[in-house]
Image 1 (cartoon, rainbow, N blue to C red):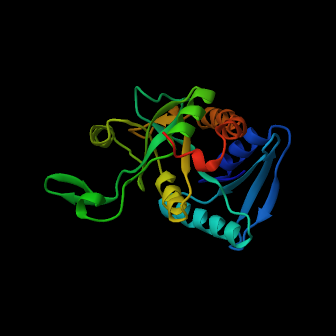
Image 2: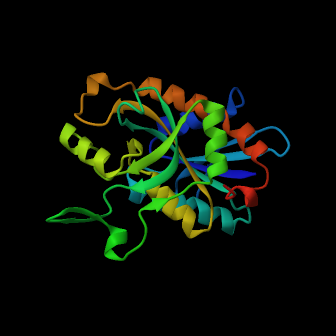
Image 3: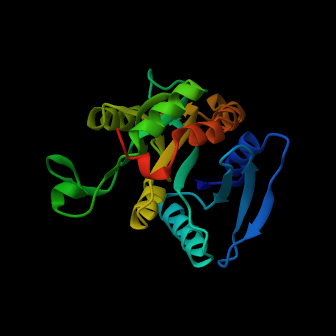
Length: 248
């Protein structure tokens, strides 16, 4: 079983890889674009090969990096079975406090649309595209159960919220939102273009709202991310064939 996990930055990539690898370490595999995957092999039958890519910050970088890695794998004759967006993000209180882990049951583009005199209109209401990707429900439930994570919507935004007022507007527009991040929807778009299922795993480093850097707990969130990803091999192995993952 082959899995591609995409993060924004190297610290998140290393947290994911170390969680899955344990003491086993990882190998670096060059991509044609000049980037690199960190490959981790988890034992078991079947074995899980996890490639982790730090693609950059924001949905555009995430989509481009994911598409490059997926295309390289297909051209090399070893495509992926699953794509994962993983990292840290801001949590919506009270559902996702600092240190919490969330598995997305919806991956939502929070700011893809238009401002109107009556408020924000998502791009779907304008007659274009989509703003929501839905991960395989069975995998979401299994991973949440294995990690003690909450399930809910994870929002993707190109601009991080910096005020209580904007946080309140987002929460009102997306009442099931637990986390705001910047890459998940881009990863999901690239995965969907190749017909692949997608998951998103996030841990909370700070509350959504006013930017108080002194209150951020990045190290704690990275530790929680590593711990959550340690469960991936056994969850994916127990889930069975990828063709069954879309079954509710």
